[in-house]
Amino acid sequence: MHYSMTVNSVTWISGNTYELTIAVKGAENIDLKYLWSLKIIGVNGPQGTVQLYGKNENTYIIDNPTDYTATFQVYGQQSSDDACKVLMPSFQIQYEYLQGDAAQYASTWKWGQTSFDLMTGCSADNNNNSNADFPTWYWTKECGSCGSPSN
Image (cartoon, rainbow, N blue to C red; front, top):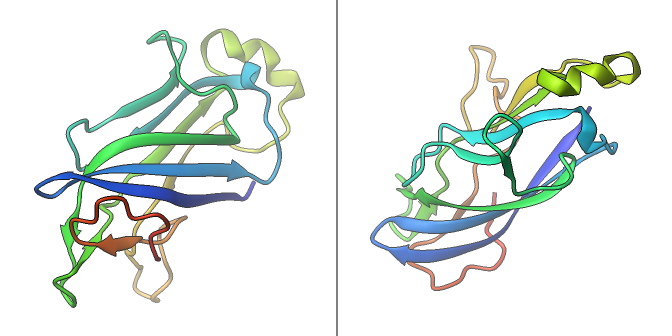
């Protein structure tokens, strides 16, 4: 299933720390009953993992795995080609469906893989094909509130 991600806002906290708000939307709606865990991993920021939903962890920040926003902090990386630009560090959004008590709904699951990561970034393979699901975003260095960053 196709997912899209937008960066809704970026706010400079201090130094190279920025608060990032992302919105993620799936092409189809998947009911919350199928979800076991949803987290953002590999975050280069104060928290390496941001748990958005987890039955094992009793964390229920989101109520729809295919249409949600998440806010977390990242350490921005200065662009190598423009000293005024900051690049969003790469991270992965990790989905785990049909595990634990959610496994009882396996007979009605129709969306393919039940565990997968969506990756941000700009890495490419030997054929110059992107390995990421979402692009790298950038914004103006030390912006107070940056509105809509670019990709």
